[in-house]
Amino acid sequence: MTRSDDLFEQELLGRFEAMSPLPDDAFTASVVAALPRTGWLRPVILVLAGMLGVLVTSLQLPELVFAMDRIAAGLGVAAIDTMGAQALAMGIVAVGLGAATLVLFRRGNLTL
Image (cartoon, rainbow, N blue to C red; front, side, top):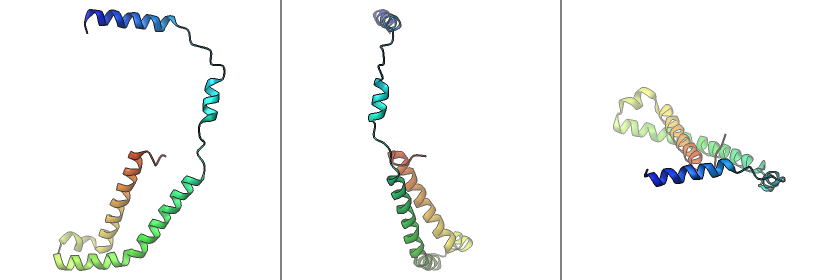
């Protein structure tokens, strides 16, 4: 910083220190009271949507396992033979759920 910047910063800090806090007059309480309330409906809808997703996935799982068996037979991948098609399918589902959770956390739509 240049010397003039240091002087300006010192002057600014001095002015902040010299000021006393303004009276609140219940302003903060009125602002907090005006904020929208988080209801119970959104978490319930998210949980029901998640459960519906699990149901749809579980209904599709036998077809997915059968398809993984065909892929394993066609490709002859040792990892699929070692783990089994069901474990591979559940791993794919787990990775998908993990990715969806990460996206929801990043967007701020999912909080703990």
